[in-house]
Length: 387
Image (spheres, rainbow, N blue to C red):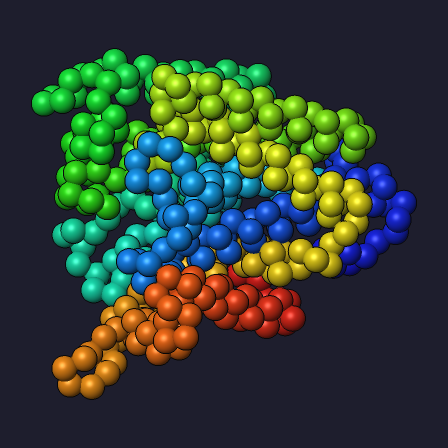
């Protein structure tokens, strides 16, 4: 815990936070995870969906905004954590079989939590959305972890490249009934067609789902980039070499994504191959900066709010989502003007003095801060919900 809070000797910090065979807790990764989760809560909870600043909303279709970086950041972080956590578990004598059982159990819990959140509060299973954020995390974590446990890094790199190229070919040249080949519209793309065929009426929208089945394959590559980064951090290189390699890799990803986007547009809902490269590159650059500031330089106190969010990431994501749904169901007001509890709070406490747009942002920021306070209480009591 001293390492988490910024303690430890100057000599230990100079050697770097992670060394082969003796992986310490990577505080920058906890902070990055907290940044992603805090960002999710911020963009998912405006005071009013009719009043949202453009950077805090997803791109309508092709293109990207800062909001479109959040989910791939989290999947990248999931990948980075795999070699760090498994190396630590292996050092404690855990076998590959035991690690596999751990992965299967954790993936099942995450997927079930995602279904629970989709069903809450009415639990009408006939139209429940099968895929979703937690479900995608579960499937990506499962596949990335099993690949890490069973195959070498070269084969994983080959698989990652093959998946990105194959996905591009499939969406560009495989014809979709009624639409033809290369149609990348919400309804006409191959990924949406596969989801309609496989999942029927269990989608986010009537005819497509941004966390569908086929698009989970390139999402896996996002996590595999993270796995490779985790292995790089565990390498015996000095911090300078690690940082240089991460900067080069991040820059290559950004440039590659922008160039590929000319032919295969950057699109979060389709999780296009260009989107994987771009967001993976940006994620690597952000982690590089955090790693240098927090784990190499030892400047940790400033990122404690992010670390506290990151230590209970899934718990705060689930709890904040369920509370947000509940606030939308509770009705308040007088006869003739009855609104949801969320709308009442937004109108009375935020829009009344900040206006519709700034009030909507203020509501979202306040929601993030309330949950930060609750997570700080858990942290003070050393309560961390592990899945």
